[in-house]
Length: 270
Image (cartoon, rainbow, N blue to C red; front, side):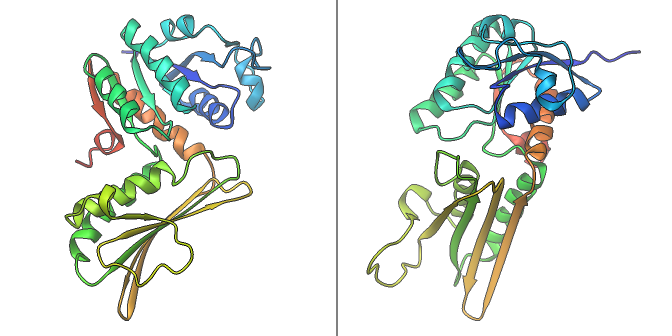
């Protein structure tokens, strides 16, 4: 018996992540690339989406969001917060699933995503890479073990074009560690230091951000104690890992009718 393929529509098809998602979808035997769309005025409108990855496929990039969503079972979006929320509204109107890898949402925007998930299934995660989500699980354990006598610092590096900082992945790491330590990240986070800062306060979690070149994404959580340091690091050499994880998210949503999930749910790590 032939299993039906999951039909996906990819937002921002002309961008770096959009192209990677197109290529991953074309490689996946159980995924159908149903539609690719981009913002109105994009120079890629009307082009074969596959041509952007040297693999013509007959799917033309459109700026008709409604038609693109209608063609798919699931929308995959790694664009920008405002655009993603617009696409989410359309997915909700049509009753379609959505995988959101966009970062940089504020609290009110996250609440909009949670509200939409009451009627459609949504995977919303700051990082779709399977390896990163394994690191999230490791951090849960490390924080419980290293809950006394260790200072926590989170260092992340990304390419020069990334517009939000710290990265969504770094913030999620901070949330996981803070929860494991019995702290509230909003109350203990320190985002960069300058000047005469005084001695480090014991209960803080520090963040350092690096932006430059074409760094895809590096993250390190440092637990610094007296006489020893523990570092848990993940380095991305390609966006392909994010794309493959997003497709896993789309497959996961095929059996859900509503709810808000993240990659820990997708990977069965709860």
